[in-house]
Image (cartoon, rainbow, N blue to C red; front, top):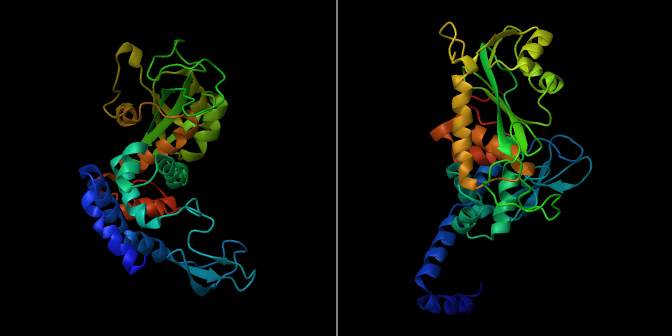
Amino acid sequence: MKTDQFGHWLSELSNLTSGQREKLSRVLSTDGGASQAVAVLEERGVSECPHCHAGHPIRYGAASGLQRYRCHGCERTFNVLTGTPLAGLHKPNRWSAFAQTLREGLSVRKAADRCGVHRNTSHRWRHRFLALPAEMQAQALSGIAEADETFFRHSSKGSRQLKRKPRKRGRAACKRGRSDEQVCVLVARDRSGRTLSQVMPQFDHDTLNMVLKPRLDRDAVLCTDGLPVYRAFAQDAEITHEPVNLAQGIRIRNKVFHVQNVNAYDSRLKTWMRRFNGVASHYLPNYLGWFRMLDAAGDALSTKHIINAAMGTPYQYHLVT
C-alpha cells in the first residue's frame, strides 16, 4: 500500500464501530503469527522432489512467503506444501490462529470470526487440516485391549441431493437398534492409551477381521461386551478373548478385565461432538481423527503440532508411529 493510501486508511479508523474495531484487532493479531506459521513449515525442509522423488533439490527463490525449490531431474519447481493437503490454500499468516481454534474445538463460524476469514474458508481449512490426522490411527494394540462400538445418527448435513425428506437435527432415530439411520464407529483402545476409532461400513465378522485383526498383537487380550460377533472374531483370529456380560450387571472380571476404559473414551467423544450440533457423516472420520489428536496429546498439544500433523507428521504422544 502506498503512503498516501495508508494515510487515508488511518484517517478512516475513527469512523469504525466498536464491533469493527474488535474485528480489526483480531485480524491484526492473527497477522502477527505469520512468521510462526511459516517458520513451522520451513523447519520441515525438503529432501526430495514431490513430483519425481529425485533428491537434493536446489533453492529457487521464494513465492507466497515460502522458499521455492527446483528439481535437478524434472526441472519443476515446488515448495514445502506441494503434494500436501495444505497446498493451494491462501493466507498462511492466519494458520497459527486457525490451528489454535482446532485446539480449542471451535465451530466453523467461531473459527472464521477468530481468524477473520469467510465461514466457507474456515470449513475448507478445517477439513484440509484434518485430512491426514484422520488417517493417524494406532497401528498396534498390545496387552489388554478393549473394543466397543458406538453409534452416531446418520447425517446428510450440507448435502444438496437428499435421498429422504429433510428432518430437524438432533431428533432420535425412528428405528430401534442398528439401522441405516445410524453410523457405527468401532473404538478399540489398549491400557497404554493407543486408540483406534474407525467408521465401520458393516459391523460384522468380516469387517472386524479387516479393521481390527491387523492391529492386535498376537499375545493381546481382547476385552469386549458379550456380542457373539466379538467371540467369533477372536476365535478366528486366535486372540484371547475376555467378554464382560454387562446385561447381567457384570462390569469387571478378575479385577482387570473390563471395558470401562473404552466406554469412558466413547463418553468423552460423544460429549465433545455435541458442540457441533451434528456433523455430516461424510466428514465423520475427520472428526474422529481430530478428537484422537486432542485426547492423546491433551494440554501438550500446540499449534505447531497441529500444523505438522496437517502436513503428515504424527503427534508423538500415545499414538504409535
